[in-house]
Picture 1 (cartoon, rainbow, N blue to C red):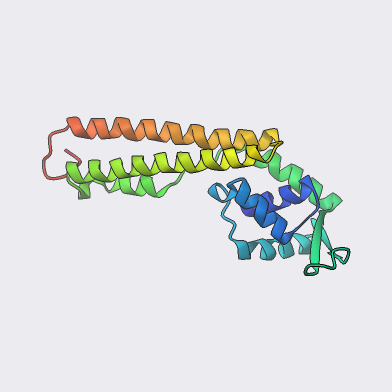
Picture 2: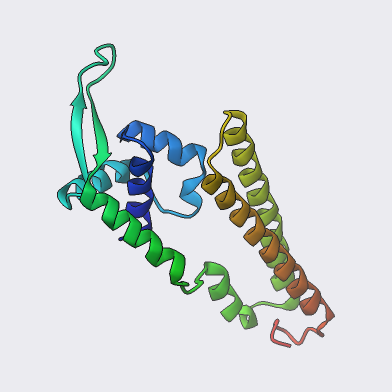
Length: 186
């Protein structure tokens, strides 16, 4: 199961929802930071989950004031798949692959000053990302009750951002102490 499928299935496990509600929760919780889910992909993934027999849908005719909406509910098979996928992702570390690592592999292409400038900008953008995550967390908290598992997801994002900022700071310091011989591999 992909991260996006598991994320959407988990939202339906929490409570029956229609597509737009799923979009709202994804946005509120900042889920796009860890699961690549575009708005248009939500309906594609709901269809896929339904074909797999993990969710069912029914048309909600009670709300006649708005458009007809399909409400999705998890099935018994969906609960089994959700539990199994959750156990799998919680017990299986994945490779950590980011564009930063590609940049680090190519550091020799830059002068020391260019590398330091680029990494300083990266560090600044990490700070902006941290502020964005904190803002999302505050917004979720302001709505009242925040599920404990959502709180720890925000905590992980902030902790990982802090660790990355500290690592980039150490790298900048290390590069700054090197003599420049035309590239950063000096």
